[in-house]
Image 1 (tube, rainbow, N blue to C red):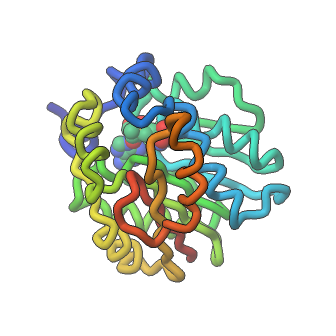
Image 2: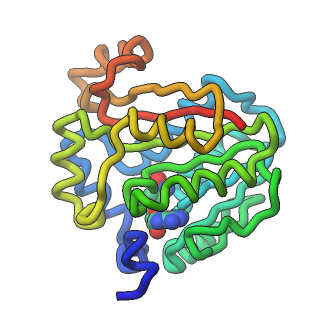
Length: 235
Ligand SMILES: C[S@@+](CC[C@H](N)C(=O)[O-])C[C@H]1O[C@@H](n2cnc3c(N)ncnc32)[C@H](O)[C@@H]1O
C-alpha cells in the first residue's frame, strides 16, 4: 500500500460508480445524491451574494457534482476543483462545467499561490483523511484564502444514529473516521480562522409525509443532532 493510500481513502476505484453507490447508500434519507450535493450550495446562498464574481476552490471535489450546483446558484464565479483521486478528477472534467477547472494533487500541498481564493468549500472530505493531517491541510486552506475569504466545511454528524448507520454500510466509507463537531471547530480555530460558526442540517427524512417538518429545519441549526453539519469560518 502506498503512503498516499494510507493517509487518504482511495476513491479511484469508486469514481465511475460514485453517484449510484451513494444513491443506494442513502435510500433511508428519502433523497438522492444530487439532493445532497445541491442542498449544501443552497445553504451558502443564505449568506453569500449569489451575483458576485468570485474565485472558488472546491477542496476534495470528487466527481465535481457540487460544482454543477455552484454553477447553477452562483453563475458568475470561477470554479477550481482539486482532489487526490485522478479518476474522480477525470469524471469532473467530463461534466464540461463552464468556467471550471479540475486537477489532481498530492492531497497535502494545495497547488495554488497564497491569497488566491475568495471561498474554499469542502464537502465530506475530512473524514477520509488521517486526523494527524487535518491541521496541516487547514493551514494550507487558510494560506490560499484571501484575507477575509470564507471557508465552508460540510461533514457527517457522528451524533446522529442514522448517519452512523449510513456511513457504516457505505462501501466507500469503510475507513471513514467521522469528525465530532467540537473537534472540527477546534482544529479550524487552531489553524487561525476566525468567526467560526456551526450549523446543523437535515433533521428529517425527505419523505412526502414529512414535508411540513423539513420546513422547521432552519430553526434547528443549533441542535447538534442533525444528520450533517457545516462550519463557516473566515480568514
Ligand atoms: C465522499 S467523497 C466527497 C466528494 C465531494 N466533495 C462531494 O461532496 O461530492 C470524498 C473525496 O475526498 C477526496 N479526498 C480524500 N483525501 C483527500 C485529500 N487529502 N485532499 C483532497 N481530497 C481528498 C477523495 O478522493 C474523494 O473524492
